[in-house]
Image 1 (cartoon, rainbow, N blue to C red):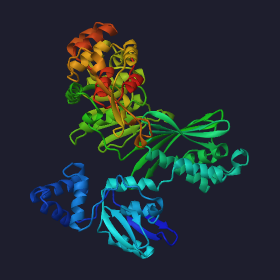
Image 2: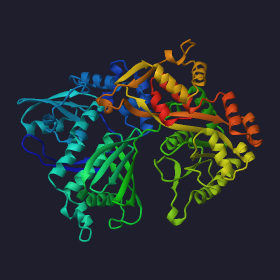
Image 3: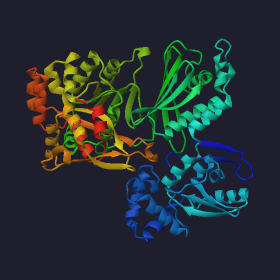
Length: 608
């Protein structure tokens, strides 16, 4: 891809027009292979023969060598760049805790800083100190020296340091939006619905800049969704971060037509259509991230409501271990994934991470020896070597029709985004019976509920037992922020409250069985739990990121007998307990005891 960047700034800043060729992947270092080999072998970090082997492996996978070494954890980023600094006889600097004045940052414009991976961090009348991952990029240093008429002192740092400091370039969203509102830059035509030229308003600089800020800030905050909600007198912007919605800002009502029109143009939707729902998609891509935005617009009483789902296309597919499965559940899951046919079902409410789990399993199965087909609604992530199709209700391309067509594509493995109706359920079950491995999702509260749901969809009990291998039920809970984590013991009131809601004795028995706690006369009172105090790193929430809590139900002979006999839910639950199935609630308490999440989070998402 080629990018043409043209920037004009005052005397103290940089002007540059440059055509840049940017290859796929993230090239973070401009050292040649010979230099890198010298650095790593002469310092005894990697033997010469091993370096050559690793170089061949990286080349075969189409990955830059330095990225490959870091991703495989052969060398830590800081160690690599400290050795690079020594090789060039330059100082190394860790920018993590360093505060950089915004005026110093503006010496080098953000697009150039991002492109060349450089950060100015100190400056006076004579000298500018610049941190870089590429000390060999002399052209840009000479350019800065010429334009600023100051000496350049070069420091080496890590890509992560550069990435963190690039975020400082972004103006605070609320202050920027407030400034735009104060300056009344939105079109006054916004409330004149008869004479408004929506495309013209959408192209206004304030509207474009406001929408760009909303999107960019959401990416920075790791939001999963953006909500733009019209009210009678204003427009509310909210982000969903770690599963929770937060108010971000309130915009003036007259900004509504332009902002909605701008998003419609980005998503290639009909700008002048306000009466019916519309769905679309667009993408923001640069050398730092590639994020797809799935857009849903529906008419409401006060105007059109917009919800955008953010999908990070550069996000790495996790492993089952990274998902957070307990050792026993992990063993059960791996055993059933290896089976050549049958069904693996992942169940839970919307937003519980089912798709991520399916893609993780799919990635484990994705080898050149099998043909994998999927029918999804929508396709959230592109997976190499998987034939992915998206349902389209407008033309009658449903899950059932797509699944039936896939069976003529000689598949070994089939992924069905969701089993919603009787026809899809029947085809999926018969596919599993005829030698295919079928992966799919259901909307039920727990693993046992999936068995009842399949029966409600018209699948006979004997077919359920013959086809279902494994059911994984899950929820997502927020992780405790590692920067402000604190330990505590439950007080009497908290214990009394828990005893009213839960069977504490069963939970303690599971914790003892899994060797999470030892025997104690004080019971739950003696257990150390954790929570986040709240800090700037987590926006004072005490949480940062999310992890799953799971229960895995394996189809055993004993369970099959009960299902065929049409046993009650309590009988099936009793058998699941005999099979040592860890429930989501118990998994949650294990993670709470281990300092991963809080009891409050577990109760919020996994109440019995």
